[in-house]
Length: 250
Length: 308
Ligand SMILES: Nc1ncnc2c1ncn2[C@@H]1O[C@H](COP(=O)(O)OP(=O)(O)OP(=O)(O)O)[C@@H](O)[C@H]1O
Ligand SMILES: [Mg+2]
Image (tube, rainbow over all chains, first blue to last red):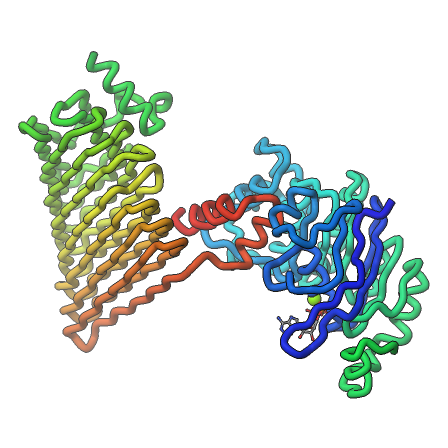
């Protein structure tokens, strides 16, 4: 069953076309990846699906369980069960980890905070009362973001670069958390340019300069991505830019 | 009867379960002293006035009061004036901390005026935490005025919190004069809504060598609320150090104005200030909204954090 459909979506910011006639279908209950090099438009796509105010001027449509969500605000989309973990999560002065997690949690019991902190490998006694502020390391902050999402129990989560700034040991905890989400029936959309993260997906979409280049089983996309996109042959290629802007094929 | 009033006041400040009658305390409703308890070395002499209470509080030389002294100033009726005159003397080397609750749970039109004179002796320590509990809709006018004198190496800290219920009008004026080696810390955290008006003036004069002061004000205003902060540090002595910090979040049609004044009269003194006024950070807002909070719930949580 298709849970989310991106239908012929384009987004132009100033004079540059950041997403170019993207169409994708995401299946419910699977881990799927959107992969592509830096600047491909991955975070932009995630922001647009979440409905962030700066990304609402797109053409095409976004459908969640068959219904257009194009005119819904961020919180309305969240209440349908869609959420986003930012590539660089926000910091909050004075807000405690426990408050931050409980704000998102379905189950408002304080024990829920400990449960989800343990799931992302953070000792509850050490983290529960810390501030979600600048004193957390980048990796800790990302894991707290995931903990809040585990507590929210969304239908669909967009994880933007879940591994960036996270050390090798903690990455395994993040992968475990992704498995927990999947087991709970959450559809996971991984946004990444890392082949290691890509491996966790059942299915993948490759985008480049805002255009869908390929899609398929992860193994096939990894091969293409690792072989042809890293390093990216399109960087600083003027013909490619103009082709993308005019909606031409690669 | 008195028991019931005590219970009602304690309940309005959420202390009815945890309050222990043997902790040093003074509980006042309007101009009536409902309950008090002193401990060795702490002398409290409350005196009822027609419109309030005058209280002399003294901590004897060298005495360290172990547990915080609870002060509850309540005005349970819907209307009225309460004038509290405090005369506080902390003798040399003594130590005390106060936990004060000012509660007007049924206020429709209430005035709470506080005049405090505080002397903190040589090497003595004084800390005062004041939390206000106002009604959701009523008009409360709070006018606290304090004149504080710190003797050599005295340490003074005061914190004012008004987050629950409507502010109404607050017009605060605190002035601390610091002798050598003493330190003063004054903090205020206030959340204004509707047509609340917040006026704050905190000032410190660093008279003695090596004296220090930090004035911190965190305010949030929404709807049509207005805030005006005039915090001032004057440093007159060598090695005096001071810092003024004003952070204000404004929402809707709120208006905030911050005027930090620093004046340095000695080349070896150093005083800094920072003031930031702005809206709620949009990424913080979007993050919380992406977890299902409405915009209003998200703003309130962010402000709660800033004011915590
Ligand atoms: N508001 C904006 N105004 C102008 N250009 C923008 C804006 N937002 C994004 N872009 C541009 O759009 C392109 C896609 O950006 P995006 O952040 O979506 O890339 P990404 O695939 O997530 O890259 P990375 O792997 O580095 O995170 C980039 O060239 C970026 O500079
Ligand atoms: Mg990105």
